[in-house]
Length: 322
Image 1: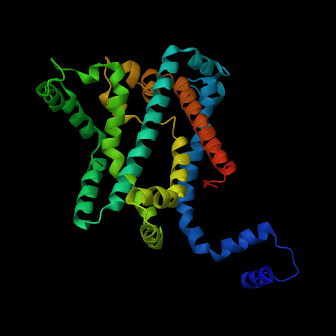
Image 2: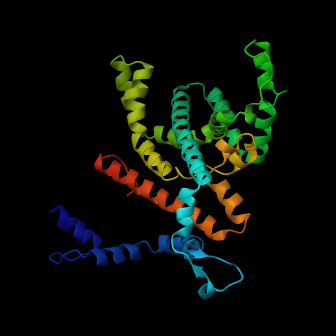
């Protein structure tokens, strides 16, 4: 009876099987305004995201800009073999995965923690001040942010002065000159810059939780931390899972600006990532085939990670992208 009513409401005559294609075009016709609004974006997506995929053929050629497409020398997987036999590429691959992992873990933990704490604040004025202060670094360009970080961590910066006055060190430390410390500096800098901005989506998700749940838990004697653990976190769990899946797809994208601006010859073994490798050894040396092969590898791995994470979430019965 319910199916018959739904069919009558949607305009489908009873007794006829519902066609997937027919239903799709019928829905498309009803939502023609949204379709028209989406056309410019689809055109942009096709021109700037799909048409350039034709350039991946360069990865299988010994590309020379002066020659036409049919005159290029095809070398198969030679550039890919070179990448995986090159120690520099394996090093930057390690750095990329490590910095992406640090950014992923710290980004989620700090953003969720700050969102939980802000959600518990009852003084609206103080809450807005904290939100504003935490948001501000996001709107600072990495050029300015890198200058602030370099000044702070220099030998005559405030960090060295505080450590000297506290008696924790006897002489100044050039933090950006210690290769092993770069990942720590990168993680702390990224958290400082983006933690406030990342809390927005979690705070928005918390507003959708029914306040009656908190009232019932409080009546039952649940404290503040128990309410956060048993009500707030489960309430925003779908958002956390979806964002986690999306960020796993970006594990090969550890950034470019912070590594490029904070990196130097002393910490290059830990600061250089895939994007800098492509710029330095591909584009700067006109080895476009090598840079295309590296970029192609990064994209394919990102797609594999994204679909794998989404499939795992589906198997576990969690929220997913599709």
